[in-house]
Image (tube, rainbow, N blue to C red; front, top):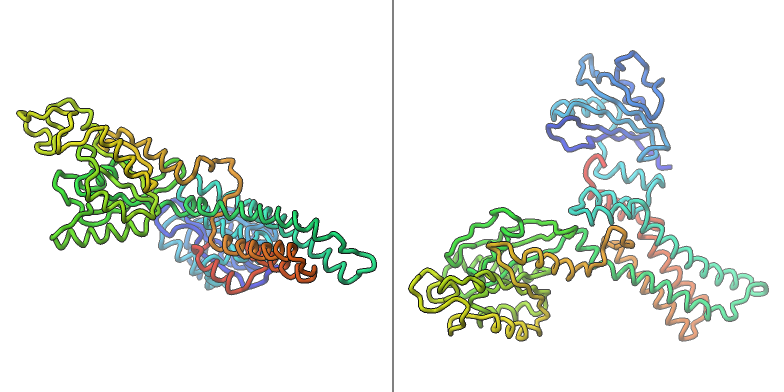
Length: 492
């Protein structure tokens, strides 16, 4: 068991609330608490059973600081596997700080970020992957992310990794035993059985790695940029997705001058949405800066929602813009679909946009300045080389918005991620170590196929074993643990 000094920290957000909680952990947690707590029933703190809640007061230097509830939890059946007390104060910022100051003055020290969870790891209560899952649960942006993080917190990744490590160490042990005692343990035909086992392990690890792209999106969200020419309806789409008037919408081209960012959960997938300025050639300095920012945001996006003004169809400028997104995942959105179906005279007309009631052009007919449905179908064929998904919507009426959401989910989640889904890899560090293990096992496979001696195969097997151990913390460096836990919030 890890032994160290007694630590304390505020475990709740320091803000006005119903209660705040101060957590104390370490070999002197009970004595520190006993020096400050006065039971309302006159009980000595040492006589209070573990696993109970006591009502009383915190007194320091003759002053009653607060009326509190105190939880007493004895090692090893606690989060840190050490003696732990939790003091529930009233939720005022000042009173919570005063109680914490009294605790620190009585023999505890202020905990570092993540130190409670670090002690849980060092004391063997959780492995490193579970420790990281703690913060993933706290930072979950969707139910999908929360469910996956909870699986890892319950040890799903640990169990998977340990099972694979067990298989590797058994094969390694057989080689080592045979090398030490060749008279009694033979390696004849060993590589013939090792090869399919190695291929099986590679298949399992590669399956885990294949889930990482989806897992990273589940954990961090999908960076989505709404792009297109001015007045295509980008800000209207943002408002329609958010179901609120977040962006200013006018008929004036170039209204949006800067990027606007918001987040949206669509069935467990978080979209980090960025609305951008219309992309066109502009002599306006401010608008040009906005366009540059739009292009920069698009370059960093994982998905581009490119809007087309349906009545106008795809212009040459749209085609040029789309060529610059050829290496991106793009959904082509034909907006203002309601205008194509409107029977009011002239509404589709690029000359009057329905403002002139005497316009001689009837809605739904195709003149040189208008686009019909057949033109749009031709555009779909034209853009097939861009691998662009497509959907028709009306940001004004909301038609097609749900279809757009489904298209995004199917594009990135492929309909495979559900509440009962197998483990999804979400952590970059885990993926790196699993890649290292795969590389080592590929060397084992190659070595078998090329007749490499078994003692050399055991070296690569052990490298794979150690790499997987880095995932769970069976193998770890102090600097790695310090780096991981330094990212935790205070009091956790």
